[in-house]
Image (spheres, rainbow, N blue to C red):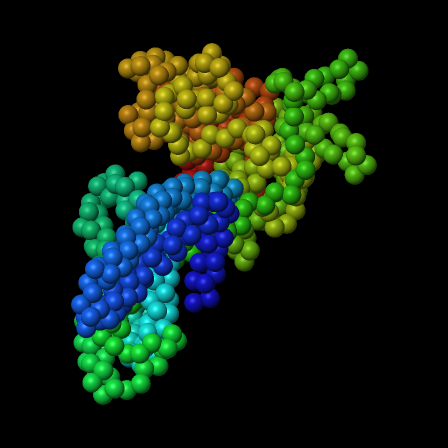
Amino acid sequence: MTNRKGTLGRLLRTLFHFYPVLMPLTIVCILFSSVVSALPSTFMERIIRLIEQSYPSGDWGAVSSQILTLVAIMGTLYLISLISVFIWTRLMAIITQGLLKKLRCQMFDGMQDLPIRYFDTHNHGDIMSYYTNDIDTLRQLVSNSMPQLLSSGVLVLSVLFIMLSYSVWLTLVVVLGVCCMLMVTRKVGGGSAKYFRRQQQSLGKTEGFVEELMNGQKVVKVFCHEEATKHDFDRLNEALFSDSRTANTYANTLMPILNNMGNVLYAVVAMVGGLLLLSGVPNLSLSGSVLSISIVVPFLNMTKQFCGNIGQVSQQVNSVVMGMAGAQRIFELMDQEPESDEGTITLVNVQEQQDGSLVECGHRTNVWAWRRPNPDGTVDYIRLAGDVRFEHVDFGYNPDKVVLHDVSLYAEPGQKVAFVGATGAGKTTVTNLINRFYDIQKGRILYDGLDVTQIKKADLRRSLGVVLQDTNLFTGTVMENIRYGNLDACDEECIAAAELAGAHDFITRLPDGYNTMLTSNGANLSQGQRQLLAIARAAVADPPVMIMDEATSSIDTRTEAIVQQGMDALMCNRTVFVIAHRLSTVKNSDSIMVLEHGRIIERGSHDKLIADKGKYYQLYTGAFELE
């Protein structure tokens, strides 16, 4: 309950923060229309009283005039109420859709700042569910449930005040009946609340499973796992069905029960009112009115109105619970700790002066430098060279399970360093630490003599080019996908990068060349072609340090020979880290690191390691299977 109260309070604060004028105006319109809805019974009481008073005398002319006046006043109030209803419904549409838009933007912006660890540990389909199911339940809550609750609550209070001013005895009867209705609502609504929350969780799991299967459909087909996959989906779908059925069973039985209880209460009030009139029991009321037919008849209408609005409030319980569950999940995503960045050193463009000093400039140049502020207010500029060093680094994805042990290595500017070893040896982990996708537990990593923890992550990653084994292409043209590496690059620079990577030839054979649209991660291209585009994307970024994580793993031997020339040109005068299973691609490396179980067991050039006839020799000659 505390969490729900906290979530509701935060949601209201968010609404008033985004709409400080529209929200109060909407509330005023809702309050006015609700109060007006409670007034017909008072007009009915006055009209019946006028008829009672004029009946003995038969002076219907004066009574008719007064009745018409009352009807005109009531009609005017209803007209104004209708206008206020029209205003607040329009305003709520603006507020609701605006809130959802802003929340989606905040969620997406915040998601961009989350660490890689979050996406490695959370189901992608469940993350997508935040933007679809949870947002939709929040829409129902804000656009329908909250206005209905406020309107019904104000109407109930207004009717209750009028009822007390007419007869305390009849009001007590109604209150006792309503208490019974609330007990039923709490019992049934509480059960539905629990299962509606479980329904949202089951829905997220089901969507996550479907998203995962969509991405791995080829694997399912290859291994003939269609029936097993159906079984797994049926299990998740059955859990979703069970939770949804139970929740909606509670929800659908609530209103019929409340409606019938309201009808019974209506009959009880009519009977009690008749008995009070016949027995002549003195009336007790706030206004001091005498109990008469002019009070009992409007009281019956107010009883129906009172119970109906209690039922309306109860009917919104399900939407409120679902909306609060969705809002809680949304706020949980928004409250995720962003990727910490305590760095102060930034990457800037500089110009080299005649005396060798570096001066920062506002336009793009081919010379980059690290801008390091000093405590005394001065600034040092350190040329970006690409010198990377690991000093006694220990790392584990979980603190209690270390995967890298005492790793020390260096790559001087322009050197090509290769990592080889069996799967799980820690090769990719090393490169993930260079760009600080994860932070180390022990030791330090130096970049141009600077501790990488002192460099802003965005600037650090801007200086690194990465070509991954798994290629991700976005919906857009070929040119746009290449330009993703450097959004400021012109078409000529993108084409030059494609030529350098060896991708220009196949791109020109596409239906629209560089303007060919790519969808579904480049499904209309071969795996090798997608890899070539990824290499071209890294080439257009023109970074001083390149990380090639199985960059040619999806390219055939003939294509590799073509690409290797472009890659050699791309690697020229750059510090390059290469991860490769195909050892022919690392022969020309300046230094080769052989990893095993998170430790560097051999290092040196290709010729030296072959001469040593150790693990690398076994891997290279096929005496030891890499996998």
